[in-house]
Length: 75
Image 1: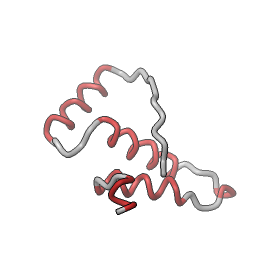
Image 2: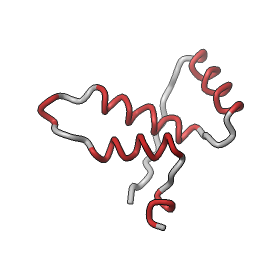
Image 3: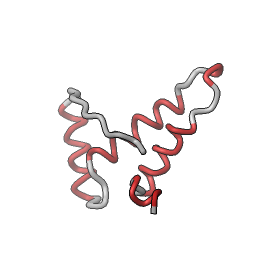
Image 4: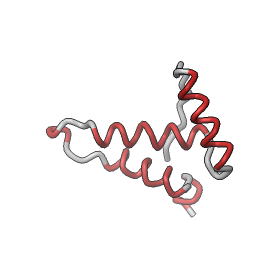
């Protein structure tokens, strides 16, 4: 099971406005889901060739995209 870790980040105001607009138009998404999807995709796209596969990041990315939670996976 993944344990959530809190992050405090500063982002440009225009990015925050875009995020708010996105979230307002998609009630099934929240800020945590967006950041999980974005960070996991970034890590998948930018891993070094000698790092091998990163199944955990891939799983988090796919779960974020399709709205699955750890409770859904264990059921």
